[in-house]
Length: 196
Image 1 (cartoon, helix red, strand yellow):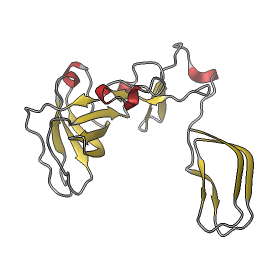
Image 2 (tube, one colour):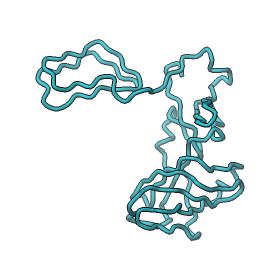
Image 3 (cartoon, helix red, strand yellow):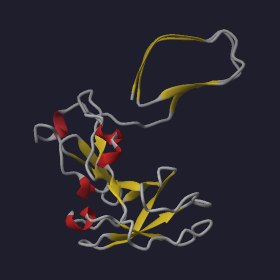
Image 4 (tube, one colour):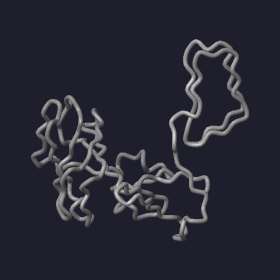
């Protein structure tokens, strides 16, 4: 928005602008004393996880959220929360993995994103596919209607294949990039600006 990157709303909170999204202390932890799993091969059924305590205090039903978890600081997985009740620390996640190399709860962290209910601080956004509504909290609390809002609509703006002597010059790319395959003789990239 207005040239600044917004953060997909998440729980616990973290932002791109202050780089707290990279701070593992801003992730939540699993309760090491609680039973968790099982971790079967090919994960046919949801796996039950238990938060260390703050999820129950959050006042949220996180069913439908995207789960991003790092298990024992070794394996990182994403999945969907299939079941959770407000006020509970236990939740089920459907993961699509072949196996987990280490299933120790200690040193395992996670965060959740993707629900409009997570939009609770400026710079956060979420999209509700059911209502086709974009939720966004601005820094000044005003409507984003008159602001410059942009989003990614494609992966590649250009695919360069089976070509020779191609020069791409003086262009700006927003939320996209170019894809140039090996073996392109005389490919020149000059004065290009890539944002996000």
